[in-house]
Length: 621
Ligand SMILES: *[C@@H]1O[C@H](CO)[C@@H](O)[C@H](O)[C@H]1NC(C)=O
Ligand SMILES: *[C@@H]1O[C@H](CO)[C@@H](O)[C@H](O)[C@H]1NC(C)=O
Ligand SMILES: *[C@@H]1O[C@H](CO)[C@@H](O)[C@H](O)[C@H]1NC(C)=O
Ligand SMILES: *[C@@H]1O[C@H](CO)[C@@H](O)[C@H](O)[C@H]1NC(C)=O
Ligand SMILES: *[C@@H]1O[C@H](CO)[C@@H](O)[C@H](O)[C@H]1NC(C)=O
Image 1: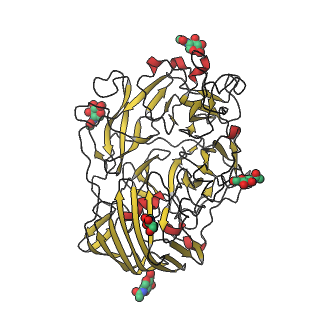
Image 2 (image 1 turned 60 degrees about the horizontal axis):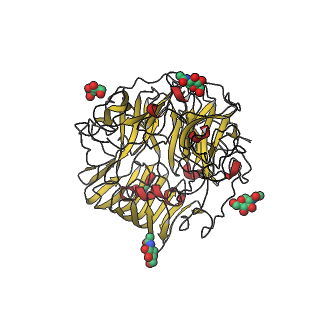
Image 3 (image 1 turned 90 degrees about the vertical axis):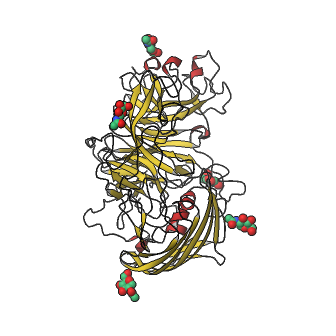
């Protein structure tokens, strides 16, 4: 299952953008992909369904459905991967096998060997004495091994094996402690604290990044330091815990917004730091990775900002949707889960270099169409640290395969979060889930695939070997200060700033290369909120060779997670490509919920590039 042909097609001339003179893109490389072992599947979740016949060693069974499953990253030796599983079918206590139940943190072997008990997995959290695991937080997502190999981040908890390697035989339940993570936000320290989400540990094993929603559906990124608190006297839980201290919110103190107004002119500030959702850190920890304000309309990308200088880099630019991302420890590569190759988003984002104006009201809708409910369209893409550029759009990690049911490139197996690099940079681990009802079957034209995984399991963990690579040393970990200079301190009791918006008005936006856009804004006082944006382009160009003419108008009504969008487009692009972006007579009307992601539209929006038509998905697909 080796391939040299996984280079993402360059969308022909449509994608020719910035010349890549200083950093020539790498050639595609051979990649081998294999599946990693997991505990056996029990036929049902019923008590005792995990029989000795299914698991003779009595070390647990997992279920057919994905539930809260997530694979994470490698131990320092690169031979194990940390995984959050949901054990099912355990016998009742006092059977010793009764501890293999519910969400647990395990290591799986990534080198074809087994642990000393003969299993290719070992549970880290099962059977830990209750007094060593008090008041655990129910959130167990995004498992991650500390660089030390002696602790793991397990959702909003930290599992600590008392100074020994998690992978060693010495790491037993009786020497393991699991501590919840607490974020004090009230001035007097009382209460359960803030609600972080998607925690990402800095490579220094001490600092943490995370996101958190605001009351009105907005979101900010945060940075802080983990501090062990053996005996808290205030705040919940009153149990040994890790506190997040010296917290700052990732808002540029200079106040530079992605779009600003000067008289009647709009400015799009590509150097603004716009941490929409924090995605993690670079391999050296010198940059914070995030999904930020788009540079191109409806094109959701990942950016990096330097922790000291605040310099912003755009890492992905392909029109498709990018999200979960991980850097190699040598800081030279990243792997990103992206819908590129699926054509999922091309109908709205395929025309390049439209400035991000309608995005003031339509960005949530544009990011919500990336999934059909639980069906993701992600595959892992390997890209060098300089990111997409020119005709280079990276290499699909799992493109080698015959496309048959269950093959490594079966499109019904969809990438999930997060992928990871082995510390020596020679391997990548990622996991996938199979399309299941209602994203297939019944009214849906996609027939439901039969799982080829063990026991009919609908999720799997995959190991990609970059077979031509030699092991590299991790980059020196950046000495990050507690308070990153450009951030805004967020001590307990602080309140959040208003989210940025642009006042109503009639504005001009000048193209970076040529032309103007006439822009009328109504009710867009909060970016990503309700309102209406109308734009007329005249010989407008932000990128040499891409000229826009025409009109586009989008009105959005956003109620909590629900987005109701009325859209009309008639844009023509000339230059290196001939392209159009057009709605049907009467316009395109989309209703989509940002959490459930079920596409429901009347009318059409179609993008045509050099004669190739990209159409929206059918309703419910
Ligand atoms: C800890 O557990 C291991 C293996 O289960 C056992 O051999 C050892 O005696 C235990 N140690 C203590 C201090 O209970
Ligand atoms: C950082 O956190 C520590 C521990 O909570 C605290 O003592 C110190 O005052 C904080 N520093 C600043 C500058 O807030
Ligand atoms: C592959 O799966 C599809 C359903 O997704 C099914 O219709 C087809 O028969 C399967 N092919 C083989 C060879 O099993
Ligand atoms: C339109 O813009 C192009 C560059 O994008 C420029 O070469 C051309 O002169 C402009 N045409 C007019 C009429 O301004
Ligand atoms: C589509 O049209 C139907 C019938 O007029 C209407 O009930 C529905 O709300 C429309 N949906 C959208 C997204 O506009």
